[in-house]
Length: 395
Image 1 (cartoon, rainbow, N blue to C red):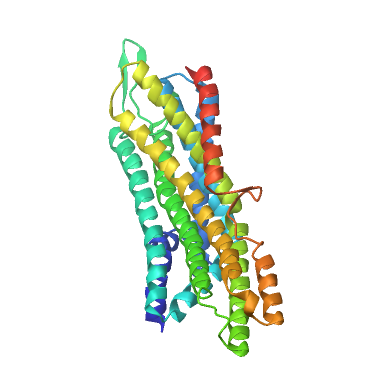
Image 2 (spheres, rainbow, N blue to C red):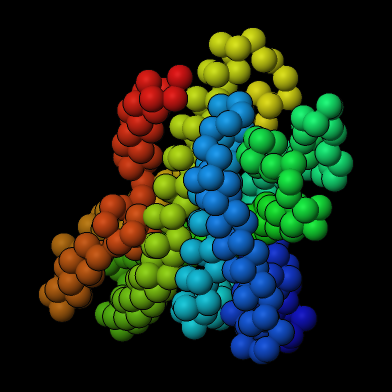
């Protein structure tokens, strides 16, 4: 039985379980001392890296290239968003645990081949999204790590000191020549570790949220398919039984969707803000490089960042739209059944079920705005507006 559940979990949640277990945030294994220490170390690494960049920015400002300053700001938003995710996942671990349990039970109880095929299709979409995100994020950080290796030497020319020390994020002039090598070591590798934590934590958390939302979508689709062949020729007992089963299952999915939204709505808000900032700032950096005729590897890195940010925005919009469309489809299927030839008590129950379907499963941005295709379009327009303003300020 345990082997079956492990295989079902792999189908349901893809690769996110591995990342979350390594990071110490997997809800079934996060109550011990060791997972707590791992989460604490991850949180400290993000805070230290963010404080370091803010301190350098306040002390020295834009003393180098504009692209270096833009990269530093992207790092600040990424470190802040990751710290928020660590805290929220720790606070809502009970909710997340209930979502995982229900997902495992759904996979364990799925016996029909057609049902498992639908569930596998949705799980495959979640795995594809995870691979795309972690692949792009790893390429970005790997390229930065290779091109900005640490340098512990300081060159001097006739009493004029010239620092050749590199920073992963930010201009080299943020590291003065008088800084001890040990402190430079701490600054460099705190940023280095923080960036790789972002790669795995961001993608692991996003993979879990997207996989859980897609699982609810597929369960709604299966539930809707179960009513498509509801006929007025069935016996009254059979009609009553199917309507009761539908109502119970529909209510359970609504509760599951609300649990997921309460757990991730602040994470979605932080992700949206971070992704929009990265997209706008990366676009400005590309314009600066093109204007300065500096066509190097940074252009590809910035393009990958924009693609990664848009992928995150689109995936949240996609799963939010799927949830809304499946809930709306439920009302259509109920109304399309031959209710006019059924007994009056069955007709009243169908009317109640249609009204109950007005309570949708939503993914929201901070509990305020619904995440769907319409929100994606509005966010894109908003980004272009902010991009125009930032372009005038920074270029």
